Amino acid sequence: MEIYLICLAAALVGGLMLSRLTKLLNLPAVTAYLVAGLILGPFCLGRLHVPGLGFNSLEQVESLSIVTQTALGFIAFTIGNEFRLTQLKAMGKPAIVIGILQAVITTVLVDIVLIGLHLLFPNVITLPCAITLGAIASATAPAATLMVIRQYKADGPLTRLLMLVVAIDDAVGLLLFSVSFGIATALSHGEVSVLAVVIEPIVEIVLSIALGSLMGWLLNWVETFFHSRSKRMTISVAFVLLTVGLSTLEFKIGPVHCCFSLLLVCMMTGTVFCNICDTSEELMGRIEGWTTPLNILFFVISGAELDLEILANPITILVGVIYIIARSAGKYFGSMSSCALTKQAKPITDNLGITLLPQAGVALGMAITAASLPDGPLARNVVLFAVLIYELIGPALTKRSLLSVGEIKPEGRTSARELNKS
Image 1 (spheres, one colour):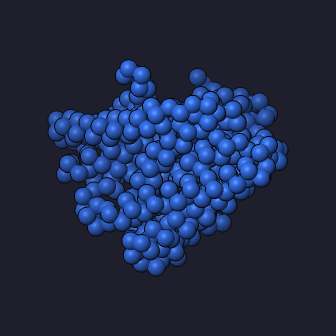
Image 2 (tube, one colour; image 1 turned 60 degrees about the vertical axis):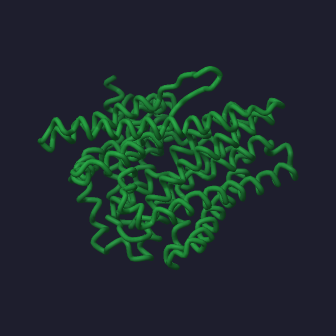
């Protein structure tokens, strides 16, 4: 237990110290946290096997999954705040159209490219693996995007649309992955299961929305018994923790395997709560300050989880590079075409796709599920390689896009210090 506490302390201090360096280089703090994780991880300082000096093994990093799951829950809860009725009335329809179309276009493009690779070189990648990677490509990392927006206090039409699209993207990605993985499993085993391909994905989404709505309503009801700001914030934190815990439950109803999407449940909780609680705006601000150390740990641990040994496998690098190019093109041109369809302003049309490039936790979760395929290890390693690249350059590209449309104020560059003090 003592070693874990020392490791967490080292992760926080290391991430913050490195953020001073990235500030001099004009890079987002989230990049510093990820690099700090790589340095403290089992493939760098962890190799020294000095207790408390970094993470000595991937198993040790994975044992801290409760921290990353909790952080992801708070991030999703905060994103739910963007689904206020006033926001939805202003840009709800375009956000839904863009969120769905860009995810589908990305999946289709990556599928076409990787299936083509399979047809040319059957020994490099199997058809089930190609189909699964296409669906994983649709997922975007909400955590990295949110951290960049918070650090630089970005605000404007692109920022508000981006937050809505990222949230919708994850729901669409969940459905695309469930269907694609069901098809891939059927191809691997020679039989098609309507239950796995159609029914279970729909059940997961419906159950997640229902649980999130219930928790949002209960949170608002419980908070009416308290009046002090500190106690109301404590209740909010407790409910997010409870929601994260409940979203990990799995059960069966007859032959149907039922589970929840942590991101979707927590986003729905935040959405319902923010639309029915009069003081939700203030509470959200206080929760964001409270969760700053948790978010730093999320990215440092995420960086430590990246397996650098995959860089020694040329097949992984080859498929990974092709995957990254195809996914980047899908996100960029998918966003551009859907923005043009919904008649968005040119600055949004030109820059939204770039801000959707980061990929992390959601994709990694999908990749772990895909590992059960005969060619599953390749899918997992390709996603790990892509996450390594995307998470290191994605936040900087997001910042650059928001700067180019004028939604990051010049003084926003000092906001990291204000964030760390909060």
